[in-house]
Length: 104
Image 1 (cartoon, rainbow, N blue to C red):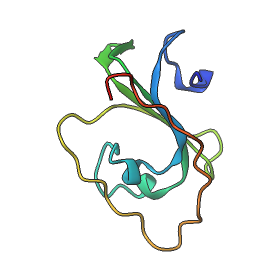
Image 2: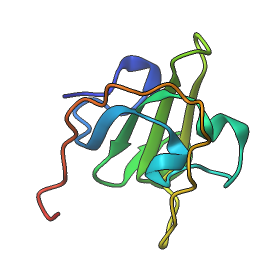
Image 3: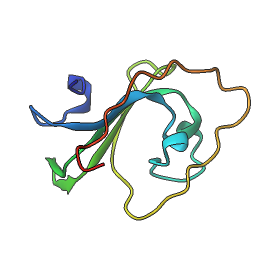
Image 4: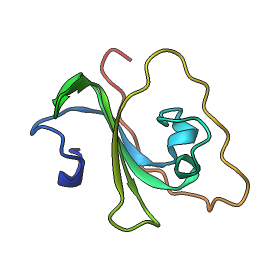
């Protein structure tokens, strides 16, 4: 599976995750507690470090479900992070199968 063009990832980028969730549930939000981190999004995470503009990092692309056209691409946070719980009232999500990198 490839990330959609809206993410702007280089052609052929391998993903370690592709599915619907919230960035807070996955622990990949840029700012812990950001209200957007509790919104449902189609999320794509690169397996390897890629070049994106002037950045070289593993990237997280979140295409928000209820905010048409809002796409956020951020570096994958480094170091251990604790997922922030999703508040009550978030509709249940159908989470497609994700893929894990070969090294786990």
